[in-house]
Length: 450
Image (tube, rainbow, N blue to C red; front, side, top):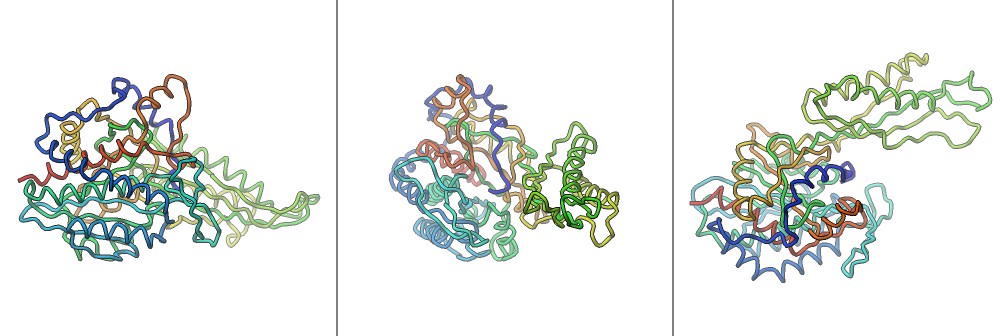
């Protein structure tokens, strides 16, 4: 997503846990009562799933424009035997199978792509161009792996529909639009996702990442951060660059604000808490000798706890206003701080659910391939499903998408492999899809087993 620039350093934190993972990252056929049947179905469906992945990769669509992508997900769920509702929260798709008494499990995928021109050189690379929300003509690419997510989602739906004799309850498959802009989950909830349809007892999701195929990584508690996009309009009084004394220079004020914001994390956030305040854009002025009357700043703010989040945002407002007052600006001309509506809340893995699901993973792919992750400052609007009252336990995990031999060689050589949101992001898709379906299907079957 635009607000989710993936930090490669995070993945180095789990490298030492992966050093013993063999390059094959083979799926262990023992220790899981469902595994052999899941693997058999995956094998029978693999060719069509690979074709689906390539088609999705070649035909990406931007956030809130997932017209054809959503229809593909609708078709796949309908063919698998689900009762379908289309158009929930714009292009959202909900598929339901009621299979006797028991709990309701929600499995969610996202569908949107990014305004990135693909540079992988793959024979199935995207050549799509679209108009973004501002009317700009942009290249479009699944640089965040939502094509992987949808393919795993489809495979999981097929597996669970064919294994109805192994589970009892209700399965709710949700294909969500507009994750990258942070509005898709909210839109589906506002359109009655948990009132028009069975309210889930658990909600599950996954996200591909630059770790070896055959492995997954997750943790209980916070795993992804609050993400807030903040705009600051710094007003001033423009004039001639040779006569600054006749102006209130907004470039100087903006510079002071940028530097003062750096003290929020270092001096206002407890050292044992994580937070980030980054100014990603600063724009103002047109010519060397003209002092403008406006400068615009764009920030991304990352945090976990609700109180820390509030304090940081309040501090941004206080600092910006205070610098304006110190410069002698009138009340009406003080900097304007706006919190954008694309913000999302921190993603929290329910500890009890995390333990159950990660135990399923250990049985499915071997405990040596289940890695205890660190929380990252990326964001995900999957978090919104866990914020409704009463709370719904949620769980998301990282799905390895890099060839293990390439991964380990990069660790030895120091090479930086492409990550999410890179125009070179190219998952090793077949083993990624197989592991994704096996782990997600195993988790659902364990949660709904008779």
